[in-house]
Length: 227
Picture 1 (spheres, one colour):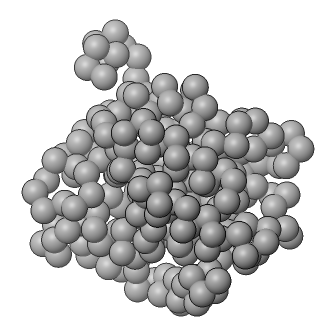
Picture 2 (cartoon, rainbow, N blue to C red):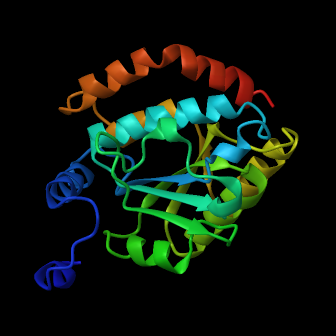
């Protein structure tokens, strides 16, 4: 990373954000080090096909807001966007007033971990603590998690942030992911693990975000986590 910076080749996230990210990750009390958000294939064509798709979107929106507060990078993919459409517009990825991704890549692989995504990951301090949300839980989410685990990263999967066309696939996928070594958790639990201490400067903003999204979080938990 240092060599790349000396050569003048900088990743897409700004240097100021990167410094804040390093500072945040290095602070004592954090249970989660080097956090990074992976948003898997939340595309327009899936709106009518995925079980409770709006609940997944609401969790993604919350996590994107958290990424701006806690300064962690965001990786996003689309699956064959020529046929399945762009990432859902309400996420605002890479919009002028939205979250700027580390990489926002199209793919044909089911896993998010394409060669270009893996190269982008390599620009960050490793291992990452990767939190995954998106679709489908039993295909692209599962294969992404397994690839990240094989690469030596810590993997968290948000039970209130993943779904599939057939809801019955979800608990089976989560059981497999636990067996593979991923941690199945919730968005709120993960965010509080990221902070680790109510005395940090970001706590009030995250607590405010949790309060702001309490109704949508409750809906997502009662729907997606009761499958």
